[in-house]
Structure formats: structure tokens, C-alpha cells
Figure 1 (cartoon, rainbow, N blue to C red):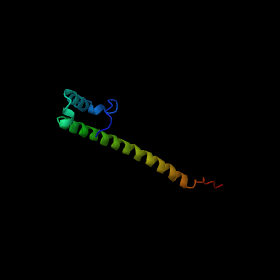
Figure 2 (spheres, rainbow, N blue to C red; figure 1 turned 90 degrees about the vertical axis):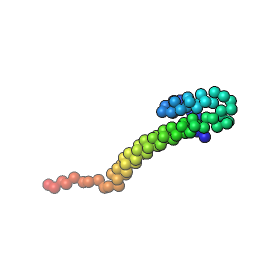
Figure 3 (cartoon, helix red, strand yellow; figure 1 turned 135 degrees about the vertical axis):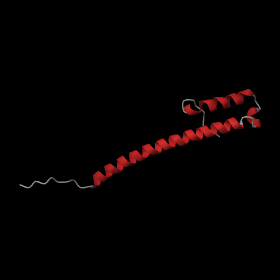
Figure 4 (tube, rainbow, N blue to C red; figure 1 turned 45 degrees about the vertical axis):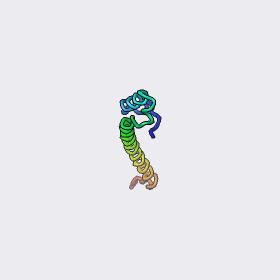
Amino acid sequence: MHPPLAEHKHQGCLEAIAALDECHRAGFMNRFSGACNDTKNKLDQCLKEEFLAVRAENKGRARAKRAKLEKIWKEMEEPPVAPNNKS
């Protein structure tokens, strides 16, 4: 099972989406007899690779955001440094 195949969401898999649609339109029984299984497997692999790339990008952004927050939290925990006013 794959997610809805919206073209604007899966730019990297447009060829695989088109191939699967064409296979399904080629004949009514192709969908049910397994004639499109190879095409579907290629689409599934493409979608998986796309998902993993998006996940890695999100993970990088989350790490950067977490590091920024930890820096802010650390600054909040440290007492302010008083200037040395020796007269």
C-alpha cells in the first residue's frame, strides 16, 4: 500500500507513478492479476527512498533546533556575570 500519489508531493517519483498508472490503464485485469507488481515495487522503492531523504532532512533540522534551544537554556541557567568595579 502506498500513500496518495499527488504529483506535487512526490516529484522524484513521477516516472514510477506514470508507469504504474499506465499499467493499470492498459487492462482491467492487470491490477488484479499481478501484471503491475514489478512496476508497483519500483514505485514503492522510490517512495521509500524519498521518505528516508525527507526524514534525514527533518532530523538534521530538529538537531539544529535542539542545539539552539539547549544553548538558550544553558544561558538561562547561568547566573549573570557582574562587572568588576574596583575603584
